[in-house]
Image 1 (cartoon, rainbow, N blue to C red):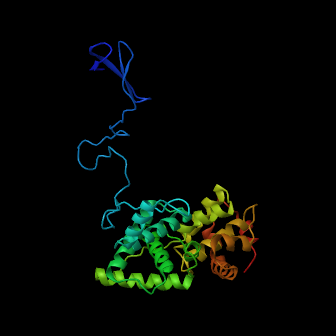
Image 2 (cartoon, one colour):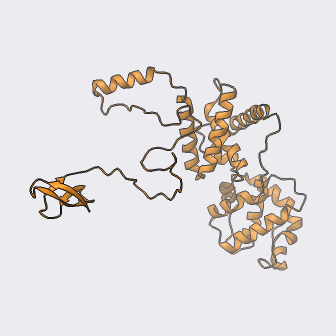
Image 3 (cartoon, rainbow, N blue to C red):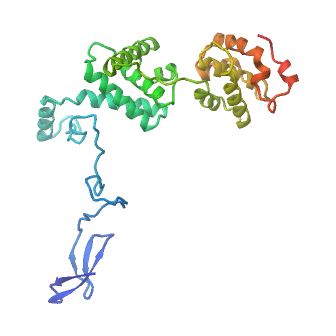
Length: 312
C-alpha cells in the first residue's frame, strides 16, 4: 500500500489498488481516488536476466528479419460495409499508392503459412521455406513464373532440408492448382539459382522410406504392432539392392505387413493412403518378395505365414 492525498479525509492516507476494477481506493474512508487505471506492467512473467530490448514487457507482433521494416509496419484495413468512413477510405487509398517493397513478400509468406498449416508442418519448416523464397526472389525476379509452383517448391525443399520430407503429391494437394510437373520444374529452377548463389551444390537431404512410413500407417489405421514391424522391415530393406523409390518401398512393405495381419488392407486403400499407383506397388512387392524372410521380423510372422503370401 502507498500513501495518497484523500480529499474526504483532508490528509494523506494509505490507499489500496483494486486490480480487477483498476480502481485506487482510500483505505480509511473507501473513496475511489482513481478509476479504470491502465496497468503498464508486463502482461506475462519474464525470466530474462538482462534488461535488453528482447524483454517482452508489452504486446506486439514478432519481428520478421526477412522484411525491410521487420514486419512491424502499420496496415490500414478496409472500412466495414460498402460505404465506409471517408477518412479511412482515403487513408487506405494513400497506402495503396505508396510503394511497399515487401508487399509481394508478405503475400508469399502468407501463402506458405497457409500451405504449412494445411499439411500440419512445424514452424521451423515454414521459416526455412520463407528464407528460400526470399533468397530466390532477391537474386532474380520471379515475374512470369508460376507463383503457386514456386511457393510449393520452396516448401518441398524446406521439408527435405529439415529431414521431414513430404511427397510431391502431398505438396501438390495444397498448392492452389499447381501440378506435379510445374512444382518439379520450379524445384529445379530454385535449386539451380541457389547453387549459383552459394557456388556449390545444394544439400537437399536424403529421403528414406521410414520418413513416410508412420504417416502412411496412421492414415490406414494400423495398430502399433504392425507399425513397429513395418519400421523394422523398412530399415532392413535399406541393406538390400532394391532399385525403387523410398515411397514405393514404404507402400510395398505396408502391403506385406497388412497381408500378414488379421486386418488386411486392399491394394486400392494403400494406394490412396500413400499416393503410389497400384501398379507401382505391385512391382515393388515383386522386387521385395524374394527377401520377405529377411525383411519381416520373426516375432511378427512365422515361416508358414510367409509361405502363404501370394506370389507376385
